[in-house]
Image 1 (tube, one colour):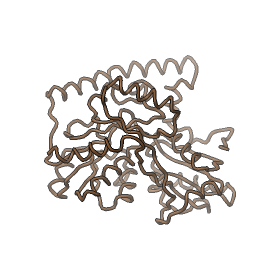
Image 2 (cartoon, one colour):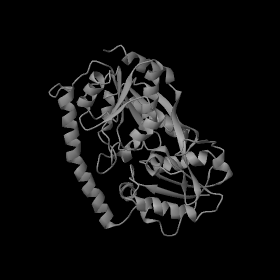
Image 3 (spheres, rainbow, N blue to C red):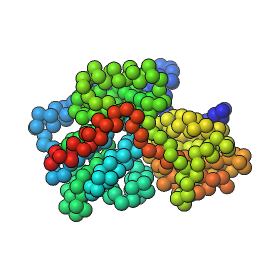
Image 4 (cartoon, rainbow, N blue to C red):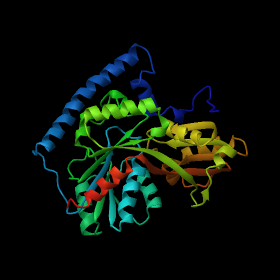
Length: 363
């Protein structure tokens, strides 16, 4: 059973959680209602700017620049938490298995000193695939083609980055929170109106195992009404094994054998908690940090003290995104493990593979 403290820890009350509580209506009162109203007003000019930008690209007033190799974009409509990194890995693996030289391009959000957490995870899982990060992804694409002789480019978090032309747009939608609370930023988590799905070549639903069949059916129905005929691929984030910072591998069965204390810095921390519970984990405490949290020395020391207060049999579990920043194999004398996750399409994989194969013939 998940234990919660009577007075939440300061790191659990991070800015994202406070914001989500505000926009979801979990906080009450006149001042909170006024804040929501002001956020809604702020979303109107943001929405106008996003729509104007898309019109400029759609009508050709602003030009998307093309490179001489296929570009596959993996993106979403909302801010964080859909599980793009496992999908990027899946796409890169697809082309690598076909003996194509592939490179990954990303903006590099959350980077502190060099590569950010997604890049570090991809570097560990795909050590032979170069990952270029920077704000100018057109320049990155040209460098990948000209200097690295890349034959396929995977554009990470690229749906809104229309300056670089792409041959395939895959849009991820998290089945547990599909529409970003129904509002554009900053009132909600939508980066652009849901009508933007009309630019997509396919939708990839993630975490479908964490919602009811009725909720999944309703979600697919709304997508079909928005964009009739758009391919929809259903997928889960399948845990494979535990891994530590030394590269050692552990069995997932360990989660059910010993008490588990867990922490993460994700856009959707609740999804990670549900994953652990689905594996039989006996979670005794859980800490959530902001997405892309950069663990300072004080954070690590606090986590170590927190872990040391648990029973001697306890293990500490986190995500690969967090482990690559903490870089320890023990916290507070307890073993520290990360759950290794892979994207697993459950329905529509043939359609996805055909789209990925077809992108090779577009240039």
